[in-house]
Length: 76
Image (cartoon, rainbow, N blue to C red):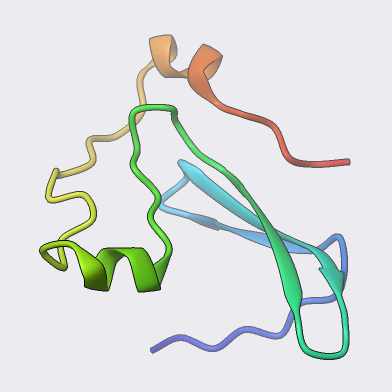
């Protein structure tokens, strides 16, 4: 497991396609923003455990030029 320290409004990229940003930090809660292609399925851990345990099951290919329009921005 990789453990990173990030401050509010800092983030990191995963494989150049997924951007995760810390939006706020509270006493017992951290809010994250995730910027990812629309075809990528993102499932919370507790919901994945209720299903078959495989939230996506698909391989993710490298982004092409056509994928740029499918990103959902979370940066402020």
